[in-house]
Structure formats: structure tokens, C-alpha cells
Image (cartoon, rainbow over the protein chains, first blue to last red):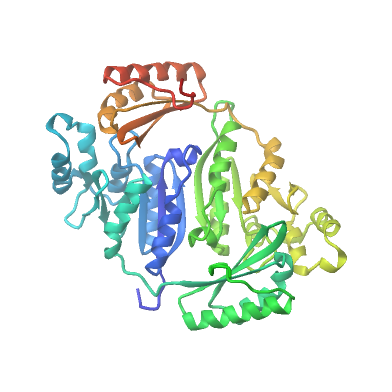
Length: 256
Length: 256
């Protein structure tokens, strides 16, 4: 990848509990924001069931398409935790008991609490290039194999794992944003906004309607790694809002 | 599909704002629960960017693979709202100004507030089989084309649209669940739980660790459309918890 290329990522959420609605996923937003800070663009998310074929095909497709893939979920001790078996299969590698992970788990449990189910959490795909992801919360580690990072699904653990693996990621220029909102309905902003977007084709401009105190409004968000161009675009958006009779307001700044 | 087949669905969340982390998606959980009540199993979710090729390929792959596809987002008036153009392309149909949708919008706006951007929200793929999805919140409708339902991304509007389209869905037997939790760590439950799962291969049993008042525990959730088998499995799980020295508790029932 050249320096100018955007660095891209995908997330695979593995978990029947998200698909059944039992659990509200919060990992995607955490990863989106964390990757964004590193200049890595989250381009796709898939939420799939604990089904081997689905995991194998999603991991193989996405690791080929994006610079990084992050999986969450399915690395616990129970029968429905099949992520490591599936990821091993995706890479065409055997699943082994990882000696380093085994040592971590054995030092964490009293001898009488060591069960085969628990030791399953020391399994990884085979290969000298597999690097563990430390888990300060409950010890059982995740791991990195090539450009795929396998993490727990429990948010506290996933967040700690992401902190551990962050230094391994090579980001691009971090993407900044400028937000401006105004009490103008989206349908009236849309036309003039198209003109601004055409004027700044390299800047991603999003438009988000809102209702506040019973009044319709629109929040406009410009995103780019180019700070100077971003400032110009924000000025153009502010001018457009004024031309429609509105008063541009930066929602990220505290009210006076 | 035969009566015995599970009825399946996929959701496509179209929105840069979710991928950037600006917005926490809440539509997936709402749809997962709503579909579950109708006996429709949400089997896959994709969150993709406002990029035509990505929308076309996701819609075409998923409408072939699942009984129903629901999209959320990208049907507003602005330049980044490209869902309808993309869905039309996916179906190989022209995008037309839908007369029924046009009438709804024209009756909703004062003549001076009618803009081309707003009228864009009356566009749908061509075809007599296209059925609008009513939007009581802000009027601009969604639509159904074959087995694909195109909805707004704003949760309040999406929820109202889902209420409108619900009667069109043919579900299977609704899936029920039984939950039991106990203060036993997941690593100790895992082995015996595998035996219960093997005893009831047709019942999906999930295991979810928790920490409550500083104590480790596990919540076990059995899901099936077969109520009688579910009761048997719940009894087997309760017996297993007791055999491990724990006291099974139904977290869905109020404490005495």
C-alpha cells in the first residue's frame, strides 16, 4: 500500500446473541472510533451466526479485500465458541494448543479449576507468525494471524484487547471532521449542499436530519484527512447555511 | 419454502455515519426482536458505506440467499442518499418517480417548499409490483420490491415503517427462549453444557458470562420453536446447574 492509499478495515461480529436481538452490539462503534483515530477507515461490518462456513467465508473474503480484519466473539470455553476452529480453517492451518496462551491460563487457574473447556481458550491457528493479544480482564488471550485480529465479544475485554493490539496497526492520515448544524429542514439544504459537495469532491459530506425542541434541523458533517481542505469546505457549508437564512452552529462546541 | 423450513432474513445497514462511529446503530436489534416475534430468523447483517457497487452486490447476494432483506438508510433528499438508485440497479430496473409517493409528498409540503431534492424521495424502482411502505412520521415512504424492503435509517421512522410492512411478512413458528443463570464461571459450566447440547441437538443453547456484585456467573439461553422440547432442555440445564452446586435462577422473572 502506498502512503496515499487509505488504510481500510472490516469488522466481523460473530454472535447469535446479536442476531437474535438479545444483545445490543456496542463493539462496532468502539472499533469505528478507535480505528478512525489511527487513520484507519472502517469500510464494512458483517454480523454473522456461530456457523463455521459463514465465519470461514466472511474472514477469507474480507482479509483479502481490506488491510485489517477484526473479529469479535466466539472465543470462550463453551460448545458454541467456534471462532478459532473456523479461523484456522479459513487460513488452511491446523488448530493447536498455543504454548504461550496455555502458560497464561495455567498460571491464572488453581489446579483444581483447570478444565478442558477452559484450556480450549488457549487454542490458536498453527504458525510462528501467530501473535497473542493480551487480555488483562480475564486472561484468556485473543490472537493475530496475518492481518486478522481475533478478539472476545464481551465489550470490556474487547476494549482491553484493542488497546493491546493498537501499536501493531499502521494507520494513514487521521480523518478529521467538521460539524455544522442549523434549523433548516434537510429537504431545503439538499440542493445547495449538492453544489458544495461538487465543489469539494474529495471531502465526504454527510447530512443528518434532527428534531430539537419540536424544530426540524439538519447536521452537516464534512470528513477528510486534509485539514486545510476541510476548513475551506466548512466555510462553504457555513456560507450556504447563511444563504438559506440560517445560522450555522458547531454542535461540538459548548453553548455560550 | 415448506412449512418446516425456517424463514430467514438479512439486514443491510447503509450508512457512513455508522461506519465512522458517529452513530450507534439501534435498528439491528429492533429488527432482530421484531422479526423474531414473527418467527423470522435474522441470519446476517451487513453494514456498508454509501457506495453504489457495495449496495448493489450486497442486495443481490442477500435477496437470493434469504427469504427477506431489509435495508435501512440512504433514502433521504441529499446527495449521499443513493439507496434507491442502487436498489434499482440491483434489480436491473429503471428508477422512476413513483406517482403514489409523489402524491403523498405533494400533499405534505406547501407549494413553495417543494424542491427537486425533496421530490427525489418519491423515486422507486420501476414496476407494478413495487408497494410503498407508509411513513406516518415524516411522510416520505419506503417501498417493497420483491423480497426487499427499503426503509429509512432514522430509528423512529424505521420503526413506524416496520409496523406498516409487518402484515406482509409470512413467518414460521415463533422461536421462544428459556433463560437460566447461576453464579458458576463459564469455564466450569462448559463441559457439562456440551453434554446437554448433545442431548438436544435441535435446540440452540447459548452461554453468556457475566459479573454481578463482583461474582462470576453464566447465563444460559435455550432457543427453539418447539415449546415442549424447550421445557425439557431447560429442565436438563437446571439439573446440570444443580449438579455443579449452583442454584438456577430465571433472570426474566422478578425477584421475590
